[in-house]
Amino acid sequence: MARQTLAQKVSTALAQQIADGALKAGDRLPSLREYMRLHRYSKNTIITAYEQLASQGLVEARHGRGFFVCAVPATSMEDDDAEPYTRALDTIWMMRQQFVREPGHSHLGEGFPPVEWLMDMRLDKFHRQVVRGGVTTLFRYGTRLGNPGLRQRLIQKLASYAISVSPRQVVTTLGANHGMDLIIRRYVRSRDIVLVEDPGYYPLFGKLQLQGARLLGVPRQADGPDLDALERILKRHKPRLFFLQSVGHNPTGADLSPAKAHRLLQIAQRHDLLIVENDAMADFKPSSSIKLSALDQLSRTLYLGSFSKSISAALRVGFIAGSKQRIEELADIKMLLHNSGAEYSERTIDVILSEGHFLRHLARLQDRLREATRRGIDILDELGAELFCRPEQSLYLWARFPGIDDANNLTRHCLSKGVMLAPGSIFAVNRHVPVPWTRLNVAYLDDPAFRASLKE
Image (tube, rainbow, N blue to C red; front, side, top):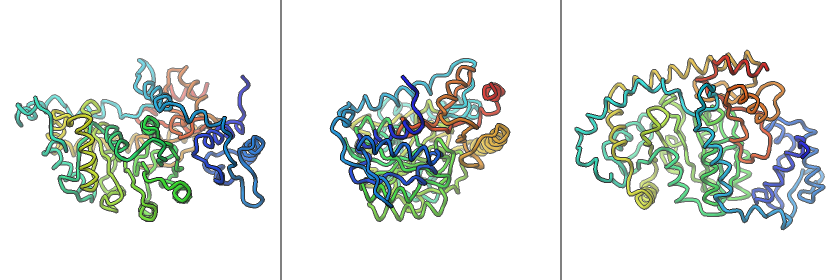
């Protein structure tokens, strides 16, 4: 099969969006300037792609106004009949690859901090305290909302972010991903349109596809989502749910600016939009970092937290904070699906949070991250990479390298040299479009094998 040109890949991706219904008859395609800014393609590439779509009868050019979607041919809707599991298979495969650790490989594409960054928690020393807290209850299911002691600690933790909640406004989960599952079960039906960031957290994409939802991507910029694009989507499609990460965004490492945060909440108010704020990286940032949920006090937000990256992924403890009514509903769904949370793990986290050692652990963790981020940026500058943004401390950096138009090619090359990367395409809502960006874990950037692989 002949290799597709960039223009052909762009036209194929847009044709798929039209077939999926993400772009409907009468919708205007992004302007040439918008598409160029978002994907960093040349003007000629975009013009050629749009003309190819026009030649297929999928779009039409309107003088002085741009390109608009025509009626969709019936044959192009075949994928709409695909089972949700089939649609989610790509994400399932990618998650399998991300969790495989090959001996001797460099793991720049990994999403977690190094184990040695977390070892000072010494989980083994907390067992006695957990058992002393009531050994008989460890043989029973926990409570519907979660362990009461842990929820009280979470209230204090949220207060440090200026988020004020009562005990019945917090429900524990089996990690942040479980929290997303509960929210999707409650608020998403098959064929619903749901907003996600593009690029964004790809396991979320698979969860939504499994539910039968249709995803629309809101471009992520260095200071947060593209709010002009968001408003256009809201006016056209009227979705009710938007998943985003305010700080330490995965994969770009970008943080939401205060100005955008305020405007975003105003937009949500106008369009009756519920925002799910996934703050799984909160412990890697100062407590003063921007939180949408602090600005609106959980009026139009659900706050999602986790301890998987800062304490241990094995404990599987996270939480959701929201209005009392929303949390009651999510707790009911949790009880129906799982009876309760993981009582032993929740009590372990409760004990850990009660000790001053945890705050010292976070201070060391953030110090390590700041140093690794600074060093990672220096290394990428030396390699001539373009950075999406330059955060002070972030587990991830989003970079593109000279001469690379499709990071999948770079990933294959580096893998042959024992270096595993996370190419930008896996974080894209539409994976048919080549992405030049790569997510890099700052903890592993100072690796001679990585430098050597780029020079070969």
